[in-house]
Image (cartoon, rainbow over all chains, first blue to last red; front, side):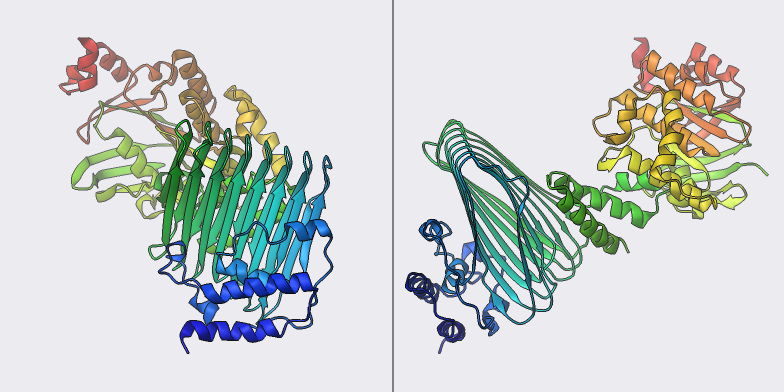
Length: 380
Length: 258
């Protein structure tokens, strides 16, 4: 038996052992598992996974948490479920194969939700989790979604989130990844945006041993999309952020700012693809990736990928990799601020730039505390 | 005991020797002006005293309140009462002026065994100092020096000095790039801080500043050495005859006279 077959074999036993579900779901799962079996786990020969080796996930015989049965889903949800995130990504296929509970939210047309929708995944050791979230925001609807991932011990989270925003809808999304330091975390988000919709997402990645985030957004006419991210890695952590912004129609605007702070022997990847389709004229797109590298052994791979097929567009991109500014350090020290405090302060300030953009005050406060603790650790 | 004693100080950057034996004594309450053409080593002296690691001290000694200053870290020097007003104040995006200054003040207060100030007491304390420099309070909430005009940056330096109340203030070309109104404002702020317990070293290329901050002593620096020292009249003499009158080459001045 080949290594791949062996890996799939483990999953097959778990797949067959799932609690039975409604026929439509059973069908969906079976097709997805078939797809996953064909694809197997990606290797570093696959360009999309070049810098992220998922062998540690593939090797482990993860158990499916027992006793989970599928919940009933309304017709509207069934119509949209598993229609957006591509099953060509083996992790998406795997998630669909183990689909049980779906966190489903529908914000009706014209409805403005004052309070954020909060989806918190709190998990414990030794299992594989495949959480699925589906959010449908109707035309002119407005909502905020906060997805939080946390847990203890070693486990594997394989999340898929699909968001569909109707015409003129305003959706503000936050993904807060605070997994345990022994956790494996793969998350794919697929966002379909309607005409003149306004979508913002902030991906804050702090925990996990091996992390891969995929954010894919498809824009329509006059859509505005903002993709921001902050990744903090130290020790031997690895965090890979892949984003795809697909300008499918004219007059779309996208802003993307990802910032990373790397310390220890950690590594991180930023791969930002911007697609401007042939008829997506007057597209305005800006991508920035900034990295602060605090140790000699940390490694960052940053890669913009622009595929521009229209001719009347404005697309800019830039990436920086740097250390703490020695002049700024001296300036702070010359005012009596100790060297380690000065280092923390400058590191904190680098991250604060992203945190300042968060519009949910309680979340902002919470993350400021997380950052404060992290950079205290950095400095000493 | 003098506040500051510099004895035969030598310093290099890379292979280049910039300070070639500087000796200078500053007593409490004195204001010393250090003048000199570009490249004479004025700014290097200022930065070496503040502890910039870019420069290597290769000889000599500096005593501050009888202690070996060169053995101290930049932050320890600041906590002991040394303040450098930067020629080019550094922009620090993401750190508010208020947070920065409160952290600095509390680090110094802690060292001196004083209680740390909370945000409320701090605001009350700085308000008065802002008036002194005619500074807009909104500057407190802006990131340190970020997006400040040249004049605002220099005023911010003197404002910091007013808040931190150093024993020895080193002003590194605080006048450069300022129009006459901004210069008067900065000088007014500096003069308000003069006192028997506060000494100053005012580094400048131009005599103009010294019309407003009148020094007790003037030293002329050329090629890393003090070539002439005197009272405040030495600055006026330089204004008359230029550095060339002392046999010192000054490119900038030569260009200015054409």
